[in-house]
Length: 114
Image 1 (cartoon, helix red, strand yellow):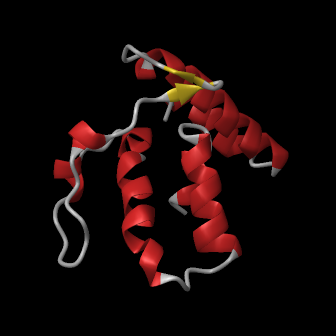
Image 2 (tube, one colour; image 1 turned 90 degrees about the horizontal axis):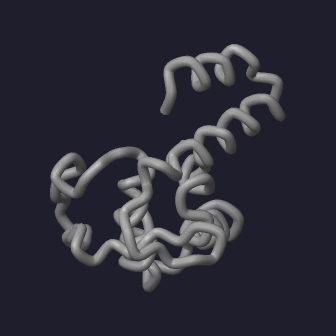
């Protein structure tokens, strides 16, 4: 439930998470820190911060200073334009709802936002 929305915000992280956690099944514990890092780096997709999530035993500490710069259409952004780019994410989500004929969800997303 967490991984699909990442596609609209951080496509590269989505592909890695999908491949390692979903398609191949998580069997290689040596990639644990990498997978956690990708998830932590994706907190901004959900409007969350490290403080919102908290600290858990055995999980690498989250550091927002280490979050990668946003990449939009292959360009690394130098300024924070996430708020303006949210319209792209919303359109992708609405299209996803329409593809599965979840029309009420598409309307709710359009009227109430993310």
